[in-house]
Amino acid sequence: MFTGMTDLGLRLTVDGPVARVVLDRPEVRNAQTPAMWRALADFGTTLPPEVRVVVVSGEGPSFSAGLDRRLIMGETVDGEEPLLALGARPPAEVHEIIGGFQAGFSWLRRPEFVSIAAVQGHAVGAGFQLALACDLRVVTPDAKFSMREPALGLVPDLGGTQPLVQLVGYSRALEICATSRWVEADEARQLGLANIVVPAEELAGTVKDLSSALLTPLAGAVRETKALLLGAGDRSYEDQLKAERGAQARRLAELLASLG
Image (cartoon, rainbow, N blue to C red; front, top):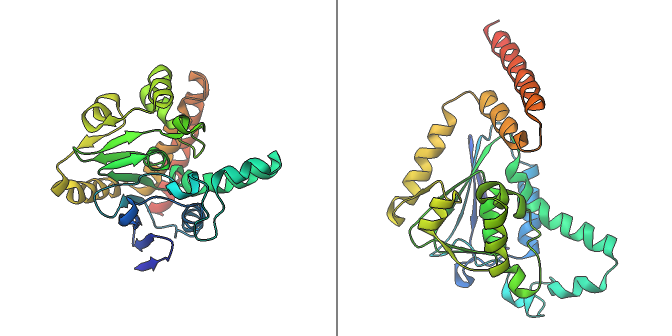
């Protein structure tokens, strides 16, 4: 078992096939910083191949209140410059920096494992996008999602726009983002943002049961199925059939090899 405690407000662990990311800044509702995003990206690149499930959660009553508000208000936090300071840099440099931020989220979409967000309380801005980066979301009745970036004159830029559209459709996604309104647990379940809503005292047990269920099928089958589903929206029907044929051929060959 690997356990990592960073001074950035993260707890990172790997226990056999299950890795866990815990946002651990409850005093500020698990507000995030770019340093946390870089640490998450590094964690994603160093996961051992046996990891099949990644669970993302927040310490305390909130999942994450989004980017540390001090960075939005023009303060420097732990050496991180204010967000608006990026506006003075050349566009190519800004693209590269934001790409580094995005890497802290995008690894959760990789097909080698299934990622689960355990969401309670606030999931705002970067917190909402972190939950959207995960494949599945288990939430408590007090969970509240909001895409705050447009209200601040910004756009969601941490990879949340595509999965939001895939989950709720274009017009609903636009309405949620453009108004920055709250989406509470019951509506999140109805829209497909949440897979299940459970009482707070059952959150950890439900995520554990779901993780166990995901570990039951052979790893290769889950990996190939996730890859097929992730790419389905970008392929024609004929291309999807071709992708299914290729995936099944690889599975049959691997299963046959395992018998030899």
